[in-house]
Image (tube, rainbow, N blue to C red):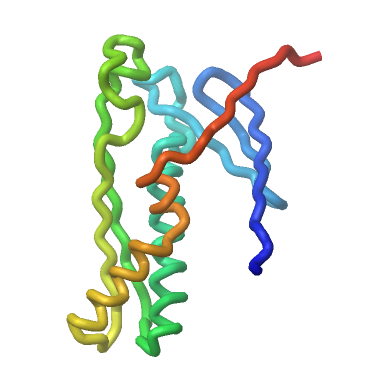
Length: 148
């Protein structure tokens, strides 16, 4: 049996729109566009969802291609997402707050044929952890407390 992977991050909100997150030995800054109260000094949390998804698709494409004996020299992954801001703005509770759709295009530099690429895509879709988190409900338990 494989050991479970666990992760934890710590985020400090510097203002309504700007935050800094510690992840292992790294710091990630997030901000919002000026139209949402930020200074547009860093990607937004929604941008990071797409970036995390693209990074995971890249890893899984290379990892699975290696398993399948497909040589890949490189990838170019483009993701786009659309959402209706009415929910997070408190104007319409009947729509989702997050992306209503995400489109991902994976381009590979490889001599693989179309059947090999189709098989690769099937495996990447089935095994990418970030795709799974986005496509399927994941229980999220929120709590709030005062700070000393």
